[in-house]
Length: 292
Image (cartoon, rainbow, N blue to C red; front, side):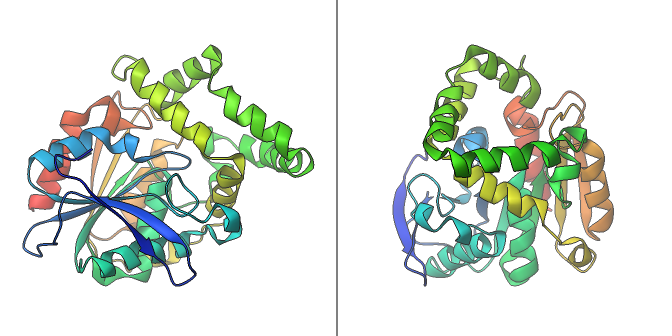
């Protein structure tokens, strides 16, 4: 993924192994460091164009897999997959690598993770880039409706009663051309994002079981960070697409109003994943924010 990869595992105090990848062997405090936090049942593939751009520019970058995701352990202790614990894992990696200051980039659920880190470990965060996220419980706002509030309990009950059947359906759903078309059309700017990008996304989504999705979705349903936002004295760049069908754009505007040191950048035809729709514009705007 980088021109020069350094992969390793960080051992947590509860005996889990968190996979991480850097483009540096020894951290240099004088150079900016980016930590990338991806969204719900996503992967670092969603940061493909940012990784390529900022690696080429000479920025230090830390990628990681959340516990219970991909190469990290923790899938057997799914109830410990919480935002505070995930934030603690990332802080642990940074301490292990002697990283004192970072620019945290979060997309979708990664915004929640980034805000949790800013709340719990403000000394670590030099600036935040918050893309297509919300600080509110998602059951009433996702897809600009409360449909998930009704669907989720039935899915969780099905998973508990028929786990093997549910997992088989989950894994095979991405093979359905209609599902691929719906994801491509509703989650992305179809004219700007290739089918190959969607294929990789769906394949990686299938590697994560439905248990991971519903555990993290339950975390997103009970987030309560609103009272902490106005006290966050951390520069923040709020970014989004005005054609976001997943998280309504007005929530990003509200987030920008609550954070005292925020600025905003919205793409008129950007989707829920504007960093894949228009990577050049997004990358340049992020770099401008960092340089300031």
